Image (cartoon, rainbow, N blue to C red; front, side, top):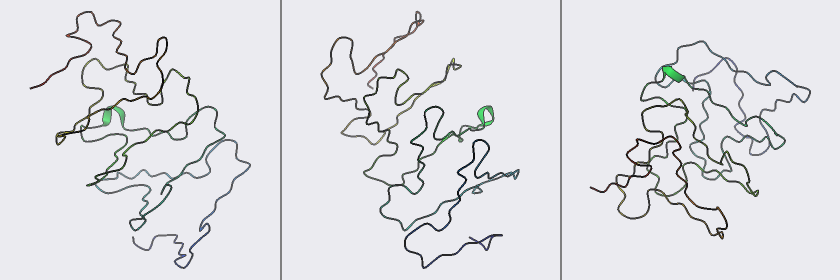
Amino acid sequence: SGTGVVKFTANSATTGTIFLLTANGLTSGHMLSLASTATLVTTGDIVSIAANTATTSTGLLRVSGTGLTDGWTAQLTTGGANLTTSGGGIDLVMGAATVGTGLRVTGTGVYTGTTGLLAITNNSSTTGTQAVITANGLTSGSGMLITSSGTMVTTGNLLTLTGNSATTAAGLLRVNGN
């Protein structure tokens, strides 16, 4: 909202690309860098994308890096030790959605890696809870579902719990029902 310092308006365009930035020779540095030393509070942000009348899209924000062989398509760095209990790295808000997927990881190759399609790592933690699923309204269905239509052979399994140093633990798996 507002008038802004630089403004592009193309309200009658229905197809094509409105703003194109090309830097084919770039080998290091940044094609686009947005920086601010402002102390953002409440609803302040650096980038805001609003397309609230969009009904069908392959992605309001799309990033393609099909030639990437090492590194990450996206890296988000948070405040680390400065975070409060209400802060975090990614917040997916689905509102009152009754269907759909909040976070989807899809691979089409025969994955043989050992680091996982989904990896949660925090090797410095000595206390606390590392993953939480809360489904207080659940009356049928599953809080977590692990399925496979593949044929398990040799050492294959759907769930592995390993606690190599858990000699005084209350158990690697606890099931509670009140």
